[in-house]
Image (cartoon, rainbow, N blue to C red; front, side):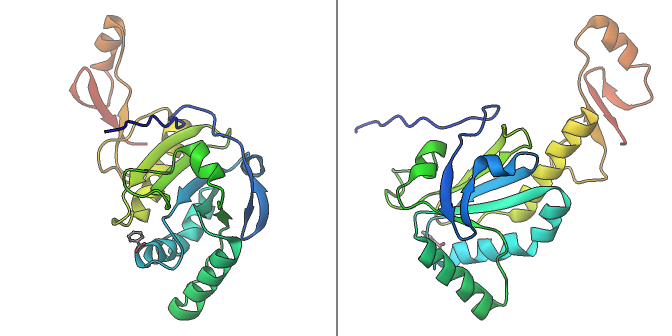
Length: 213
Ligand code: BEZ
């Protein structure tokens, strides 16, 4: 079987720059400097799973905005198709799509970000999510296959976790929700380990300490 190697940006890389047509006019990645950005692709307009995803993102739009986070969709469809689809979602489902959608007809951004999964589809982008921070660094990447809709609550939770990490220099445990205890980074010297066990944290062992924020 022929093997194709596709380069794609990774967590910690600067997000690749682009300038591209969207349903809100031409946009550049640079326009988002200073905000968090969820850049996400969907396979195609006028498909049911994608429609549920757009409605789920739209329902959380104000929550993302409260967190200084913008949404930017993408698929390999024309701007006219995007316009018709988002108008259809508003008319038939009563949900207004307030975020822009990239018309990536030449697969320009899809190729830059490695959003295509040719083994699954050569004509549609996979369900990729790139979380880009205010300095335009990629902070998280999620990929889902064509047939599985994503969990937008999890994407919002991820933003909360990343922002909590940046603000308080702590990590967050499995299934963490805002308000839950956070993880104190483990000590990395013997002296710090000895100090750690004397702290008023909830300590399971010298490397495993939680605290309230
Ligand atoms: C959908 O969004 O419904 C869909 C898109 C591509 C493949 C399968 C399902």
